[in-house]
Image (cartoon, rainbow, N blue to C red; front, side, top):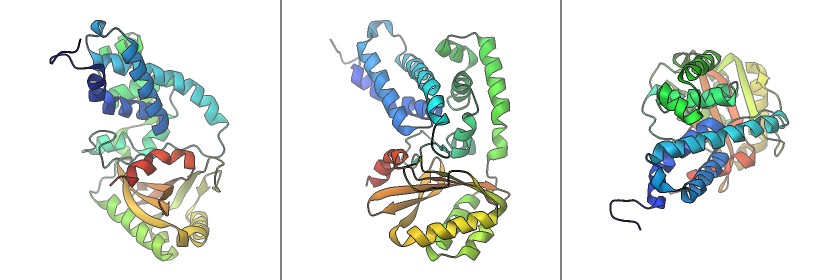
Length: 299
């Protein structure tokens, strides 16, 4: 019987849901799969004997982490046969969906660039890195979640950190520079100003497209300013008149979103290098835009 001092299973779970979703998304790089994982955790929570769960938050984090490890194992096989470049699903973050993003470190932890780097790791390395970096778990806590020894977890973290690289090297040092640059990109794109776009791109800029075989998109990275500009000229000629381009905060940073009527058809995110755009990540696979589309459609 539920009392005033004992929250219901639903109330207890909802208290932890945002944190669980943030954990699952960082582990999987997929908002839809993260939602499914959190729902699976809810089913396990309701079926468990709650009298034996002393710390529900820790219990649920362990369940979600292990569900993600299982999903990552099968995801690797699916991504090997994925058509074209695989990019993480975009998530709008201005509403706090992925937790507070008040520092450069917090924003970096959900950036497209970092999520791509995490693809280099084994599932267990990724779990250790995410729990340590994004959720500040101690090694003893991580060991309890993964049923591993503390020394093993320390070694896995060191290995993961070497493969991902130093977070500080990914931060944009000049406050507001990214916002101004993306705003300038939006203005030039709306006006079809290729000369203006050229000034914003690094000479060795790379464009990555994720169409998943569902829409027309470059299946390999397009490298070099001239080639990227030619690609962008074609995109603007073909689509600009039917698209509405606006700015939104995606994965902790300003990005371009493209809509055709009420439908989200693309998200373009940016990685800066030495004050100009070094990489562009274009997600156009409609299967990957549903979550962000629902977020951006809310009043």
